[in-house]
Length: 300
Image (cartoon, rainbow, N blue to C red; front, side, top):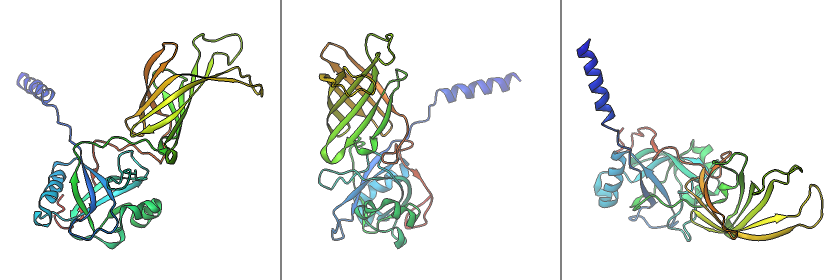
């Protein structure tokens, strides 16, 4: 029994002292194969986390057809942008309203049903997924470049909706992004500094903020509206009180930094109350390898 116990203890310490390394996620650009005439000029981003897949992608980029790695990337896509997938070759690098959730491998052949091009998929994402079961295998596209780092998250209308201040119960924000105008608006549900009074509702503060956004950050002017009464059309007073900066790390998490003219400053975390299909946070560090397609050099 003593020997058995000692072995167990030794194993526990070995496991505790040998943490499993997290898989690295590497982002690749999938665009029209450079040896084929360019027809559409668009692209999408492919995140890979399995070392074997990353090595295959890098070898394909470096050696092309001589690499022995198939040119066609078979992936599974889902409706909704993830804030990262975008057309890096398009003007302004616009975000796609779909993202990759699975990787089947690289191959030299694929069924015609899942062929197309990113812009074609974007025209009706739901119809494409319904027709192919979510599988996408663009015949004339291949991995052509590797990004130096994870792309910055991009604000989009998929962030619209209710968000909560995770540090203060009963407080939060409602976000409204107008992407084509580059505008960002929020309603801030919070309280005044004086606390409750004898009249219900007096403790609430009606705050709003609006401005522009770029990348993952919105820079806004903050306003406070006062003088209103319940269901009363009497005029109210709105005045600028400072600045608010909102930064998002993904579709479900962000942070708010405020700097008010009266000297109050602070930062707090935001979390989405209910996810929306317009922006879906990727699960894990990279896409899961869905299955072996049996095409080209796609090995399990």
